Length: 552
Image 1 (cartoon, rainbow, N blue to C red):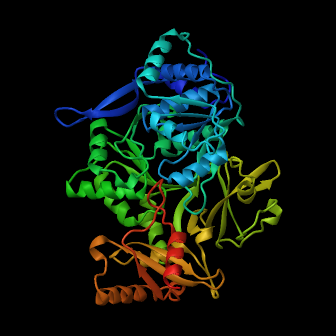
Image 2 (image 1 turned 45 degrees about the vertical axis):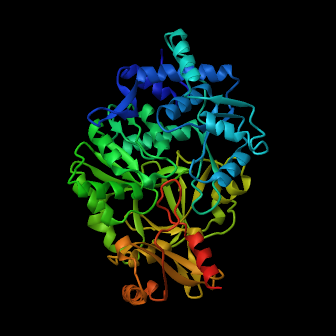
Image 3 (image 1 turned 120 degrees about the vertical axis):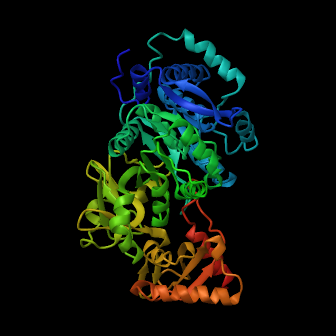
């Protein structure tokens, strides 16, 4: 079959099946062997292409049409990949919502998006019937991965034409999917992806990191598994709970990497910290790895150093981006450790690298309201801190059913637009972006603003500090800055004297930098509240509310 000339991103799977039909596309854990190796169920690219064609035909028989918003509640691995590509081939619009965000937040997302269909296992579909008001828009429920669904695909796949089922003729602006933000600093928002946006993401990831057909990926964020069939690489599904990534058993991840000769992987700092500690305890290295991508929160150099010792043949990268535009920039561990970290530790921000080719980044003055056009956005002096805005072919144009959020996040610029990242930063003389934290988490004192990244990095140099959080107590403009410390478990202060000594040491560190001298309040927490997607982004606004309540 001739490759489709239209823009439907699912075409990449068919092209991979034509190029390497017998190559493994997906490996799904299925118990253990007698020697305790992981047993896998596999699908080749030819099988995955054929089965997703059959699934698309079944979904069409059940009434799914091009444009049908379909809430996808599939488990990571084969179910998710098969269903996603079937929906894309059909022209339906899959809706993905993080499973760990909590029932209330999940239901709010459903109510906003108004899906017309649900695909998933029998339990979540049954639960949806207990909330008839929230799911009032749903007309079709399809149970996947049960024996009836599997048998229907097995029966239908051989009956399809040899060239496969024609895929929906999308153009670049055709809606492809709706993916929700993590909601780490506000309500989660549905991001409308188009087929051209997803194509641009694929090109950025492949070209920037040199990922080649035939490689093996262990994606520890399930949405990243969706890139792999289009890249021609094998997806090994990790044994982990996607709603609680930091609870992962590192032994299972290490075993999967070694057994499958995994060449690259994406995961949050929380996951890679557990893997590095496990490998250190067991004197284990991961020689097959060529690259590791770590994102979701700034990465401390302690982790980069630890990972280097167990990844003898890999380069470590920390990409920067957001659900609305991914990726924006990237930086290697080598550049961080050899150049930028010394500046970061003195409060000069966290360097997130240079923009990728084809991505434009600019800094504008901080605004709290919508910006009607670029002429009214204003400019900052070179090197000055302000809002980070981005223009990219991988950038979403709008949120789903949320015009207020769209107006606040997008700046029209002729026939194009800029996306406001909601982050603060600056651009140095070499073109590198320095991240200073989320705009809504900035602390505004009578003497001026304080930024989370510039303050926390100073106190994070204390050897007993795992991480810290800057919060502002009181009314913006008149806030009292405070630092909340999460020590390493063995360093948590026990008793008044230990606490006073810890605080004295922190104050001494803070006195070294002008911007941290004014911080006089220090609190301790055993565990910070964090986001559900990466278990790494600190919920500073939650901490702020907690300590304001305690100090009343």
